[in-house]
Length: 304
Image 1 (cartoon, rainbow, N blue to C red):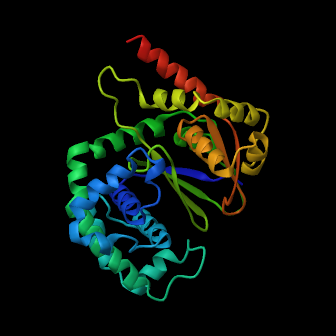
Image 2 (cartoon, rainbow, N blue to C red; image 1 turned 90 degrees about the vertical axis):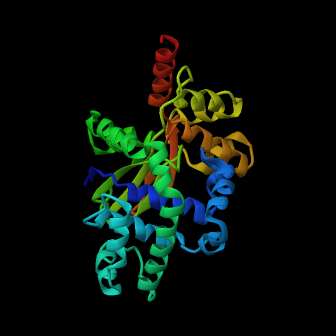
């Protein structure tokens, strides 16, 4: 049984995504924003930095993304936060329990209210200004329209095309895949899996500066400039392989292989096949579409 694909957008998702990256402080090495973004944002947060750092667990953020999805009024950040703050612990339980993979904490209401307080500060000190300066709302909506209009033969292909390489094989549990544009987590996808629902924030690059090469081309050419990565791509060409198999083939350390795989995934050159009831297992294969997309983008850039 396959799943249905749904597209969604609200600035709330990017609010949660940006604050999660700042609060958890663990992904920036692999993201376009880099560690420098943390240092710059620390200056904005000032004395409140300690209160924000690690204040919300990854489980809390999973719940927040789900609450954003089910929220009836998320056109803007203040409306969402007002709605969320107005939910009683019992109401939060009713909203979350149908999709929760495990038991919900006894202090659910306090946990969410603490998150709301921090998110209000984050919106005031950082996110509201981000929206005004970057034009994210317009960029996200344009990406959403483009992705929705793209022709794909089936739901699996639509997810793979939108995310640049995520292959979520149908199973007996997942019924809906929600695709949402995101910027702070570029060049990677962020995936949150629930009982019968998967939320994916896919990366959207800002327009390149005049005369600058497209970001996609830069990522792909950099990824393919390493001979170990080219050997990995050739190894992945015949059929999907596990990470362990890639490590054994290359003879490199797990850390080095992980670094190479991250670069290839970011460039859209490999597919990540998620299998199992909750998509907890991964296998990898070459994504020739990514090579073609890079070639077409390079050709277009050279001809303008």
